[in-house]
Length: 269
Image 1 (cartoon, rainbow, N blue to C red):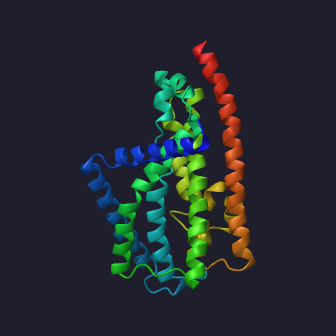
Image 2: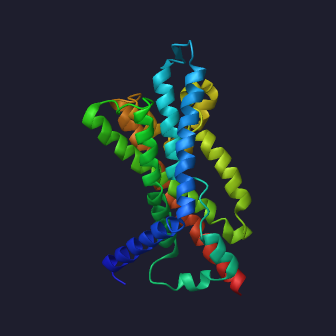
Image 3: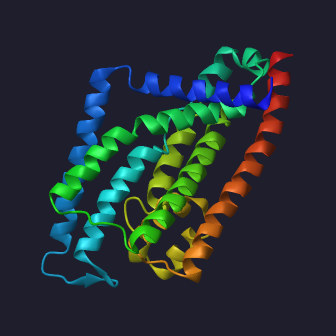
């Protein structure tokens, strides 16, 4: 299969994942309501926290509220605890057939994840519109260039999240059940990414530790760009760190995949 044909096939897989994610209307509606309710709740909570307080750790109330809103939106889009179909295919033995397909299994899985992520965008747009309507969100700092930097950082953050999801899903080759790994990953990712609490508010030693992990590249870095907390050399360095994590995680995924192939041989032998 040519490279162009593989791209067409991957796009088709992504579209199918979008349709699958949006197939059950009741689930789509519940998910949309859930993210809207979460936006309202985080706004109420953070406004209450800042009642009578101008700043905390140099962060004012409106910024903290807006960060909490976008943190909820990012969590919904990135969905770091998305359950990959890879586990089911490994457990049912269908993985052997997948390995014979002209498109690699890893690209197939990533295309499915991209489709699932894209399916979450409409409800998150509604959440952003709600936040704007109630005055809980403002435009990104830095004008057009700031918006461009935010888009680039967000794309890199999504790539980091998808690769982390892939690595968790591939533990199925060793355990056949990834529910436990996903629960641990969900707890760690939501906290360490800064989606629940901005790294600005964390003790210096903890923030320093988390900044050396890939999770902060998923949420905290894009939101820091959004609010203008990074500029000039710091902005360039932050984007470079995100790109570096994409490369490192891709290499790690390739290594894990090469090991997983040996596991498939053992299980099928």
